[in-house]
Length: 114
Length: 112
Image (cartoon, rainbow over all chains, first blue to last red; front, side, top):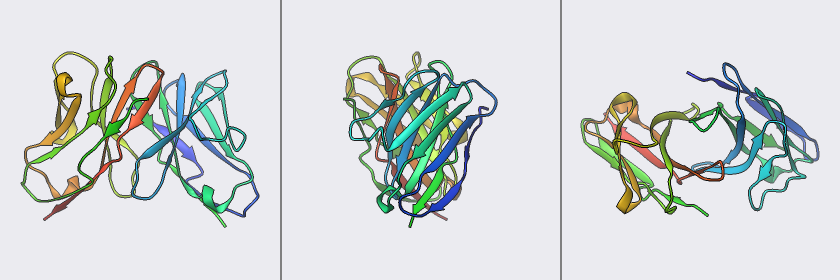
């Protein structure tokens, strides 16, 4: 089956620094990638939809200047949390989709901002 | 905007009991429907999906779901649960606009 990886799996950073999370589709080309945020015991909240070669589409309430998304190739999307603060601490999950079929999810990245 | 609701937030069952988890969505047009499972410490995995055709969909690990268009529902079922089914279950809807909407999730605990 399709495999999506995320790196790093866990990151701890100081408040005010920026953190980059990578999402890769390992065995297929993803025309669309999605970034989600999951709070403890809660559902996934879609943050943005990322299409290769174009600007990401952000959901309402998600700051595009804070959560920078780059989808540089058909196998890689990055999420950069700029000037991270403790309230940005969360579990960030990406997914990748080829065409209009199913999304495949990455294992997630646990971000802790001190 | 679309919404997806899962009415059961936490379900506790004994092994061999039957399971039904409810999922309702709000969009009236053509949708694709999914159930995902998240086992403790693991990432989301696809259980089953419905795009078109037979409204009764069979997935992995003995799970099935039935799409009832008139009720905007896509309930997940399993006749006999096992301890290993303990996990978080998410219903998701994909409609026009290239977006996925997830339900709030149902935490299933199966007691041996």
